[in-house]
Image (cartoon, rainbow, N blue to C red; front, side):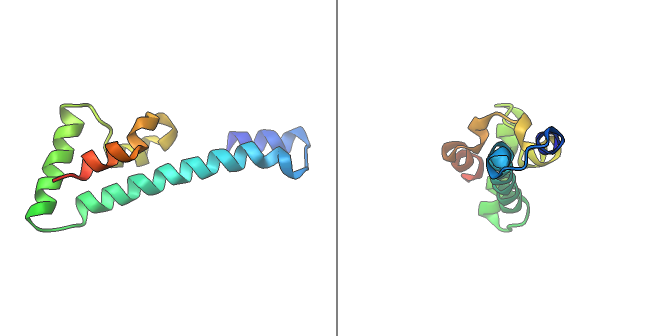
Length: 96
C-alpha cells in the first residue's frame, strides 16, 4: 500500500510508474496463495495420511523453526524468508 500511495502522491500517471507496485503485489499474492493452499492441505484433509502430514508439518515448525502457513498469512508474506515458498520447502512441509 505504501508503494502505491507514494506513486500516486508523486504525481506520476504513466503506466510504467505503477510497475514496481504491480510486481510487488503479484509476488505477495503468489506467496499468499501458496500459504493458503498449504494451510488448506494441512487443516482441511482427513485420514491417516493427512494426520501424518500435520505431524510432520508441526515438527518442522517446532524443531526446524520453519514458518507455518498460518504464520505467513498473519505476519505477511514479505516477512517470511523466500525459501519458504520454494517447491522443495513446500514438498517437505506436506510430505507425510
